[in-house]
Amino acid sequence: MNISSRQSPTTFSNDGFSITAAEPWFKVKVQVIQNYLRSFVTNALVRADEVIVVDLFAGSGLYSVGHQKEIFAGSCLASLMTDLPISKWIFCEKDSGQAEALRARVSKHFRTRNVLVLDGHPEALIDDLRMNIQPCKGGPKVAVLCLADPFSLDIPFVLMDKLASLGVSLLIPFAFCLNERQNYNYYLKEHRDKVKRYLGGHIERLDESQANINFYKRLVKVYQNNMLMLGLNTSLSVHKVRSSLMDVPMYYVGFFSRTISPKVIQRDVLGEETVQFQLWSR
Image (cartoon, rainbow, N blue to C red; front, side):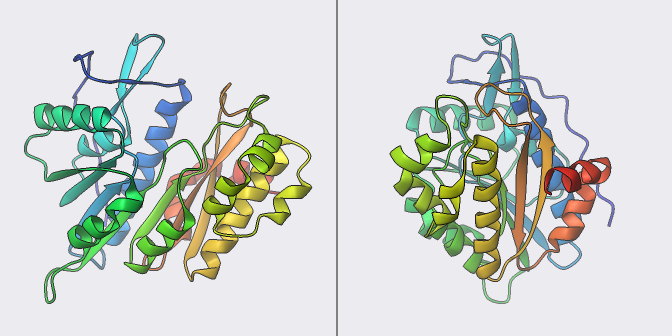
């Protein structure tokens, strides 16, 4: 099935609500996520009747670069700008001010879309998510893609396990602050418990890290292995980044699913970047 995802011409300006400052590469990351979304919808609708998209850390919906000289849609609003046959969007946001801004923007620009904005941390919203993504008995088959992209390690592994048990496919950009100040020792010593929570258990393999890049690669590998232990199929794509916040040459995006082939998704998304992935992952 070949599905177009041509974006609508919606543009955004300062509307008085919260806008999140970002580095320029965030805009590229949003496009990478949209590429995953397009591939997921294309492949999911071969078996499912409907597609639901969940964004666990939706934010205000807008980013800005250069003191708001350029304002662009985050992943949640960007997904609403496509003409992909998605039946429902569920956006979670723990900050009440950002959730208010997101609701206002959805109401103004995407009034005809079937969107639910939930206030609260995803951990506290698991029952709401379960109620809104599980199909009724005898109802249409539903495929769910859940994006977890908080630009931090604030994604407890136990939450990913719960979502995966509901048949949800997971899309996780491995992106977080990692630089000279917030380096590998910062995470392994000052925030060791957070890293354990993120990975779902033992992190001794990370203790051998002697540089940020070693720490980053090992963290992603441990995460992927833990997903495999849950019975999920996995794939990783790799993408260039130039950032003062995340001082590594490339970052990974992981796709994890029991129902959709990650290798097919990866093939669709990567294209010419496959060679870069193979070289960097050695």
